[in-house]
Image (cartoon, rainbow, N blue to C red; front, side, top):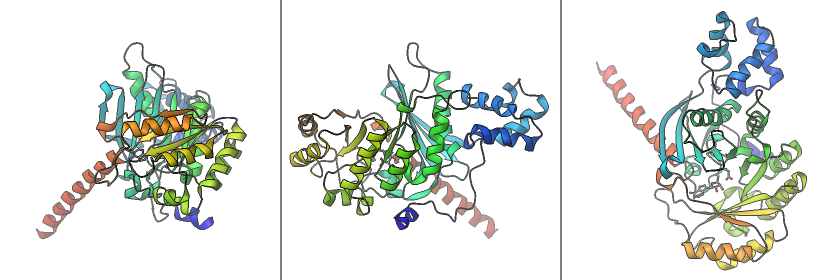
Length: 388
Ligand code: SAH
């Protein structure tokens, strides 16, 4: 177990850490830090209000702070963490995906999805991912590093800032749901993810005040971390990416299954459901002729019947060069009906964001291409300079 956790840890050789930010700290730590700037503890609450309640952070608008301290405090507590490298929209603007560049050039992506009754932000928890699921674009690139707590929170704050500035009349103006289904394996970046959930759900102005039940943490099934998460009493929804009911196929689709088998993952899921009283969402990507056979639907239905589970079927969004495609709609519909015949609540995920590289990691992969060609240009430039 320790060996496995080591292998999913960030590359510790990474020398620089993201700049410290207010959102990395809990309210008590923020207050304690104020003395370092010769400020009273309540300044931390003022800064929290600027960041979490007003989604701001520019010194010019912090008129409740003494002019002499604004620049210093903003630079020390609210540094820029993420720069938007590219934005793409689709579904008539209802879906908007952002490719972010972090302080060290790492690329991550987040997606804002607007619905008439809710707004969901899908956040990344790592730059890249070490889980190596063969159908996932992020899995192909490997893990660059864990994101800091504030880098995760900032994705929600940025979405919320943008939403506040431009939402069509009658549509929600606030982020209501957060799903950890962007790049990375959240439970392999446990501490930062749990801390970010606290920032996201702490009441305004110490946090973003989003309801715990509207936050979903999705995992490939890191069993010890699932058990630990249940004990945190965070009250968030757990999603488990199962993708196969049998170990033989799951070993291939979700390589970490070599360590934690289907039965162990589901046991941990049911323990989580029992401790929260909430349904676990079982994610199942439908891949044509790979995991969509009627007998696998039957096997899955039998495994989940009578449990506190909800199944979310996701037609595969093929990654470039992939040998796999999505199940045909009629096969997918039959798979869904067979699960329902076991009394399970089942939904088919909508395919939002497909035309904007919606599959996990696709936009970052193209960002990495950008970075690679920029590095190439820089290298050519250096070559010329040294030739001179
Ligand atoms: N590592 C976590 C969270 C990130 S992925 C996890 O695996 O749960 C979020 C969801 O997107 C997972 O269910 C994942 O299996 C799914 N996913 C990844 N690549 C996909 C693709 N190409 N098409 C459809 N769903 C995909």
